[in-house]
Length: 435
Image 1: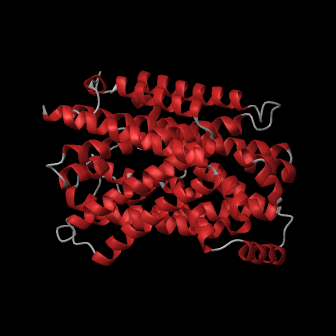
Image 2: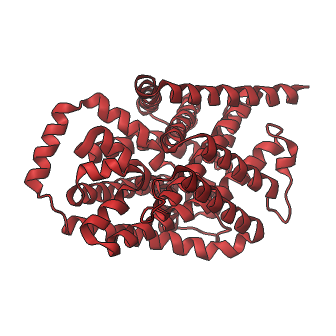
Image 3: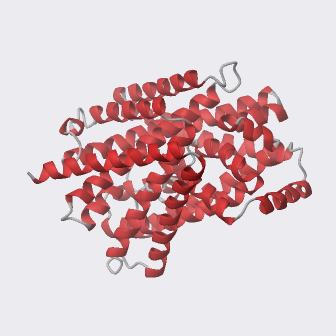
């Protein structure tokens, strides 16, 4: 999430696209690239495109609900206003979206640490990696507590610089590639024979979290010009640009870096591969891009999600202590988000965090599609597209769970237990509010 500062009024299309891109291109591609290549090889760009199409389906309901309600509360407020008589529904969506943000916060911090130490002797030390991840969350927690306004310009600089660096990385990798186009296509044909559509869909579902962030446009609804036009234009344009950026980076990596190296170093694949191709300059360039991308995403996620947590707490679905603000800053919520993200880092590995985040945002997006279907006449939505979104997002969630069941059932059990705990927590607070 990179919706992280008080912006000027009258935001135009260019600013809104930048906000959404800043939220999406936040370290996800650095995390998912190695995992995707390890599963389907050179078919990774295809899976990224499919994942982007899934994100577009998810975005359809956000766009329609955003234009209809024009509520800065976005996901949580949309569902609460669509189902006003159900405390449990409001509580559940609040719990799911907040813990989805916590998982992305942990994911970005984990990716930051993986790349930060990728060129050192500690690159494969799990606990040093986790310690650095927790440390970077601590740093941005202090920054958010200390000065919200002071971070605005710094984060803007990180957002735009990371896009420039990612572009440079992609161009350099593709122009220095050791694989020619013919060889690449032959390998793709081989991977196509060894894999299947089912495998591509699984990877597309796993990488869905890399497109999470387009919802930030809706949060700026009261500060934008012509929301009925700019909400859909900004969101769909940002998703298309994110797909393009991710595909170019993936192609650059696959052309320049041997697949076995990407797989062996999947938690910092780009840095390891760029080092082999371009030496220390390439490694340092990739590390810089990863650190910039994850830093802006960590700070923005912590900022935006803590305010969402405060809103949910104010409605009585989290402890009231989390709703308390000091100088309009929800400091208790900021610290709670950071602490819970650190706990997730301690108990889970990269793939658990990634898959929990993808399942969570698929689930939340599914709930948005269901809400939009309920009031599709009011939002002037296509029944076909809304139903297609419901089916597509449902299939995506099931595929991730199937992948876990067949490859790592203990990890799937951990995800299920997390959801049971979240549902129980949401039910408990909803019941308490009725008293």
